[in-house]
Image: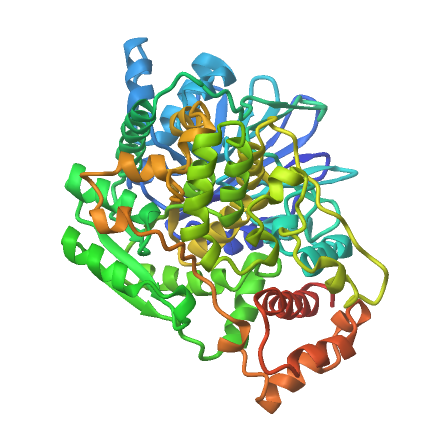
Length: 610
């Protein structure tokens, strides 16, 4: 895990700007920082910058920019199956001067070309410059785990792991993209990755699973090397599904335990994180240390299940109480780190978790990201499942009874209390941008954007989960996880984001995904004998959340004055509506989120639009 940045174009970048960029990259890579500069055969300047967080082969010999033959690489991420790829290369006569995955990656690209990506398991954002032909190639992993921002001007293209790196190389601030800010305020975090926009005009991310090639003259060609697909094997039995998931998840965790530094595990009381922890402890005998944020809101508290898992598994554990002290100054720091509003209050709390992990000397954190999307985990998934199986009367009726008994009593979203919501209207999505039309009235100008989704498949349930994986939930989580972790020089790993596991899960027929009102049925049964039974059988769905008033005391005069004082935000958001909002004694979940979005937008504009 590291930071990368660079430039390709006609401009020569001053040493001061290069040094400023390297200084800003230190949190992503405190162990080494360096850059290389070339003038290619067409007269274009090429810069590669790198800051290193040492994870595999800690020796300076593995520092970057790293060369092999005519090719140079800067690489952020991990090639988890580098030992297998290295063995293949060795069998063809390649020799190595390091034990790093970086050297394996660049040698594999040099020998096999970019088709090697089909055999690579990992997370990465990388740039490869070829001295021989003067070309530059940028690439990002399948799921977009590692960020790679792009900014083009008349001179060429800038790239970097964080926005602040590009700003440093460019030598000027970027204009704020108000359209994207409106999208965030009105529709919330699930709207942010529907399009290629960012919070700055002209700034985009290289899409996941993509390669951008620039020839020596700067001509661009962008291609995709992998496409997510749902191709169910309808003949697959439930037993085959759970066996296939078990084998692939064990292999994924095995690969992601590879490191020359110790790993920490983000822990909750649910089956997602406990699957990873239990596999590490019970299958691979790893010395697990779990870290948990302790929530003060009873709706989201699961400390009893965490304590049970810790006791049953016999692992180290650290509980971190939510600390609301100095919330506003800390939130301002986090907005500056993210170069964007913080997407939800969850990631303020998760930042505190990363701080605790770093304080105890860890450089890697492991989380259960994407289990909900691979195996079903949200309340609307139950309704989509009912719509999928409606042509099977016996299964449908049994599932309806289970939904009425176990799910209906705990659902708060009014739309999702209708069991036939998607049976009657498969296109219904108003539950996702909840209250967005009302929230658009908070804006000074008339703005509203309806819900849209990508068509991956005709399956209602799988189309929803694939949109969540690639456009709604997971890009948000990965963005926030990456920036929070890197603030404390920590690498974040997500074993559920594994290509073999993903492909297998998307061969499982929908009818197997939920059983007797229990989401993640396949995952739960795949983990029997590994994860404690009480965790597997726990039906309660808990994710970290907290009301904004838990952190922000709007009865405090100083806080209220800050929220309503003169600010660029009130050029775009109506102050009278915010005053009414904070005057309420309590806020429902959607309005609590709106206040958080407003607060972050206010801080963001004060930091970046001045």
